[in-house]
Image 1 (cartoon, rainbow, N blue to C red):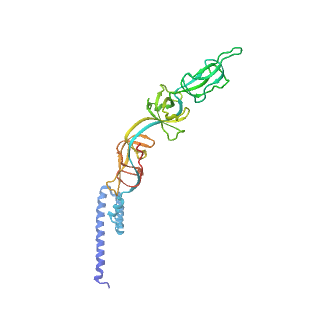
Image 2 (tube, rainbow, N blue to C red):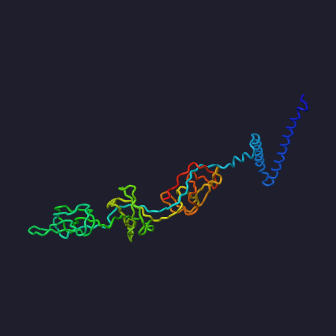
Image 3 (cartoon, one colour):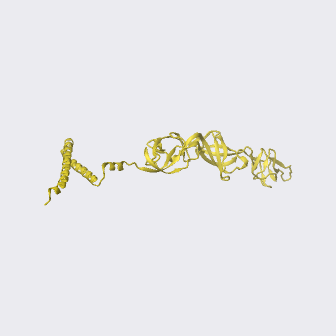
Length: 351
């Protein structure tokens, strides 16, 4: 036989459990009555199922020791995103138009003889420097039974012999050139600008010129002439760029690449263009907030972009030099997202 003293703990536990079940039943009945009055009797079964499920899940959480506060802390824990950052740089930036063409002499003159005859002497060779009036060749205009003095063909301008089609013993007339003289006025490049870029070209714009013969060297020039018309076949406009040739390093006939500087600005803020996000008509970036050094935040900031060239972007408004900007891993970021900076990249060149 079980004594009364042995039954007492069990009775107390049973009484407490029964009391808790009665309280839960009262609460469920009250909630069901209130819900049925609002939603109608037809939904009573659904409401009863939801309440039973809710109370059952609650008892399961309590049985495994998981309190409500612990679950909420796990759900509300903010994710941390791994990113790379870069510091904004300050300095100049320039926009340009890239074109290419052949270097030619700014002035070239063909030399003709005033008399027809046979060439019996040539006074110059390729590359010879001549002055105006220097002899180029002697032409004998004699005919069978008639002898004449040799006619001396002279240079009409000073310069360099760049072509010499004349050959000793060759018979010529007044329409055949004996030589070509490149004037001393310097070198130039003739470039064709596409119609859509014409508005960006103006006289005296500076140019940067490179050639394969001198890798790493940058030569200077400027726009000296602009055609008043557009070629209707190619839809291009011809321009001429006067080229500075220090040390006579450049030669006529070389292939050159020219950058015509269309816009230049000083003291601007520059970042890689890949740091900008464009969505729904807005352009913005994410900067780094170190208010809590142990948990930096990504701060969304709208910007106004400017010149974009060679992967570098000018920021006209919304950013200051040396501010840290997220450059990789920002696609999932939101304002004030927690971040983990994996790598800090070197800033863009200030020049």
